[in-house]
Length: 183
Image (tube, rainbow, N blue to C red; front, side, top):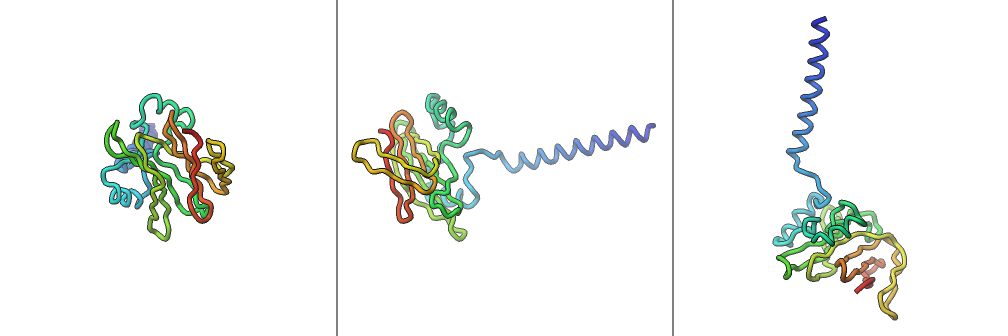
C-alpha cells in the first residue's frame, strides 16, 4: 500500500515539475503580445527608425482605446498582417510613432518579405497617434463628390486617426492607391 501511494505521489510530483519547467521556458522566452514584429523585421525597423516604436494600446488615450477595442478587441493598433499585394508573401502594415504629444509624428509603413529580405515602404506620415487595420477587397469610394473610387481585388490597409480621418490604401498591381474615407 505504501509503495502505491509513493508511486502516485512521485507521478504527481513529476507532472507538477514538468508544468513548472514549461512555464519557466515560456517566461524566459518573454511575453508574446500582438505588438511584436516578426523576427528579422524587428531588426530592420530598429535600424531604419531608431527613435520610433509601434503604436500600442498604451499609446492611445482612453477614448481612442475604447473605440479601437470595440471594433478590434485587444489586437495591436499599430500592426496588422495583410495580404496587401495578393501574392501571399508575409506582409505587414505598421504604424510607428516618435516623439511626445503634442508633437508626436507617426508613419504608416508596409513591409513585405521577399527572398529573405524585407522591402519596406513608407505610405504616409502624419501627426498624432493613428491606428491601422486591414479590410477586405471591395469598392471604396472617396469622401467628396468627384473623388476617385478604388476597386480593390486584395485586402486593403486602413489608416485611421480616430475622430478625425481615415484613409484606405490598396495595391492595384502597379502602385499603391489611396482614398480618404473621412476627414
